[in-house]
Image (tube, rainbow, N blue to C red; front, side):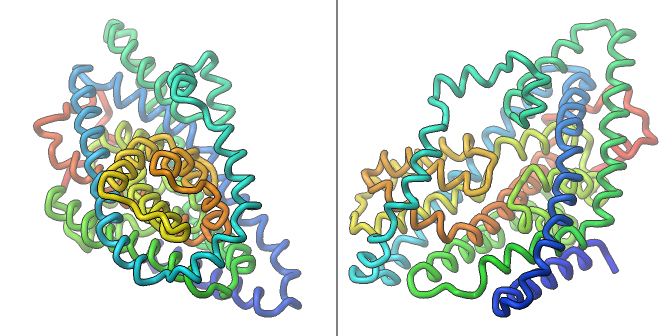
Length: 430
C-alpha cells in the first residue's frame, strides 16, 4: 500500500473516530490519549523545517554558477506567485458574489451578525499585534539570525539565508566548496529524517484528525454551513480548474502523476493547517516522485512555502464578501477591486498561525468599509475552511514548482559541484 493511500486512510479513520467521539460523550476520554501523538508528529516535522529551509536556500544560491540566474528564478517566481494569487482572488469574487446573494437572506444575516462582537474583540486584539508595514520591512533583516530561527520567524531567516548564499558566491571556489558541502550534508540529513517521519505519517495524521473532528462535530447549519461549504468547494474548484491544469499543461507533468505525488503533502497540510509543516513532504515529492531539479527543491519550495499562499486568494476574498453580505454592505465594482488588490498584498504577510488568514482580514475589511465585527463569525467556523485553504496553498507551491521546473532550461543554471549520487542532485525533470 502506497504512502498516499495510507495517509488518506489515516485521515479518514481519524475523522470518523472524532465524529463518533463528538456524538458519544462517554468516548471523550480517549482524546487526551490520542492528541499527544499528533503533537509529537507535528514537532517531528517542524524540527526539520528550519535547518532544511536554511540549508536548501544557501545551497540553492551559493551552488549556482551565476547569482543573476537565481535572481531570475526569484523574479519569475514572484510574478508567478502574484498571478496565481490574483487568479484566486478574481475567481473567488466572480463565483462567490452571486452565490452569497442567493444563499443569505436579510433576516438570516441579521441573526448571525448579532452575535459577532465578542469573538471579534479577540480578532481585533490579534490584528493590533500585527506589525505595521514599516515594522514589517525592518523585521525582514534579523538583528540576530539565531534568535529568528529559534522564534520560527521564517521571512527574516530566509533573507539572511539568501544574503549568506550570495556572499558565499563572492568567495574563491576553494573556500566556497567546503561550506556548500556542509550545507548539502545538512539538507540531505534532514531529508533522511523527513523520510523517517513520513513513515509514521498515517499515525500522525490520524492523531491530528481525531481531536479536530471531536471538537468540530457535525453541528453546522444554515448560512454558516453554507459558507463553510462554499469556501471549501471553491478551494477545491480552484485547485481542479486552475492549479492542476496549470501544472499539467504548462509544467508538462502528467496529471495523474502530479496528483499522486502531492497527495501526502496535501494530507499533512489538511490535517495540520500548516504549509511549513508540509514542506518536507513537498521536497520529498519534488525530488523522488516528480524529479524536479535541485534549484526547485532547494530554493523555490522553501521560499514558496514561507511567502506564497494561493489558497488565501480564494479564501480571503470569499470571506470578505460573506461578511459584507451579512452586514448588508453592497459592494461596488470599485470596492470589490479594492478587496482583490488588498487581498493580493495581504496574502504575502499572513501570520503563520492557526486562523492567521482571518486575523489578517482586518485591513481588507477596513479598506472596503465593512464592519470588522464580522471576523468574530468567521473565527467560530474557520477550522474547515482553513484546512482547505492550506491544502490549496500546498497545491499552489507544487504547481509553481512544476511550472518553473519546466522553464529551467531558459531561467535556471545547474547547481555547481553537486555530487551526482546524492538524492538532491541526481534528479532530472521528466
